[in-house]
Amino acid sequence: MYKKISMIILNSAIALTVIYLVVVIVIFLSQRKLMYHPNENNHLEENLLNHKIEKVYINSDFKLLGWHHIKDKKFKTLLFFHGNAGNLQNRIYKLNDISKLDLNYLIIAYRGFSGNRGKPNENGLYKDSEAAKKWLNNIGVSDRDIILYGESLGTAVAVDLASKHNFAGIILESPFTSMVKLSKIYYPYLPVKILLKDKYESINKIANINFPKMVMHGDKDKIVPFSMGKEMFEKLSEPKLSYFRKGDDHMMEFDEELLEKIKNFLKIIY
Image 1: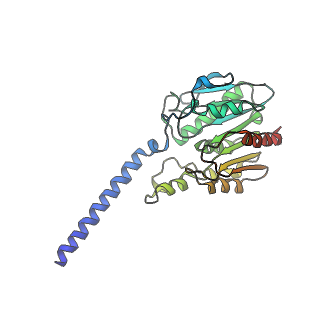
Image 2: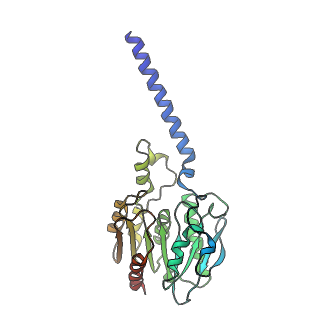
Image 3: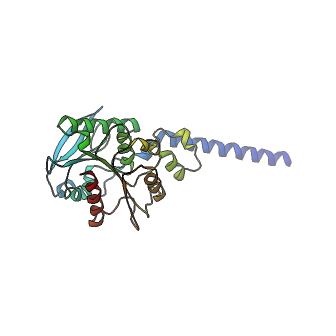
């Protein structure tokens, strides 16, 4: 009887171990599909832009689609890095409001997004950000006339670029400290530090950013903990501004209040 119970326990342990290993392998192999969602489409369409843009193509490892808006050549240029889901059209509601500010902008779609060739990955997105910066440099926009804007995953892209160059400023919307720490929240049963290919360790790079910074985060964010945005802000050096909004979710509400905060930030830069 004792031997039979022991065998049942052993077989159950083996079965659970096999199931766990299968889950680990499946998540390891599919992790980039879980992280990047270029085919999501849940916002406005391109024909609802309220201002003129030029479609441009930027050479990285692959040609990248970008939208370039010039309001006044004397203004700074906002270099916009979007999040992990959707296409350029999904950001139109933000771009329409950004176009009201004293800014030009360039927004790019990463490799694998908005019809671009390639597959997204951490190093690839960093290369794409460098390519966008160089494209602006080549048309006469210096680094000191560029303000970086990162949205969600794009905050990690913006932080990496900011840690290597001296720009006019950087704005981080709903930033996370590290993809490793964020993944531990979603997958507490997995050894994510070992399994994760794209770690996006932004918190380890911000000490190298010595120009004006702004952090925006909603305290009801259901995707990236609000505490991460606060931690990023606290560890950034001066000069810096924050906009921590009660009741706002992951993709923040672009309204007059938020735009006024960005205008205040631009006063530091201009």
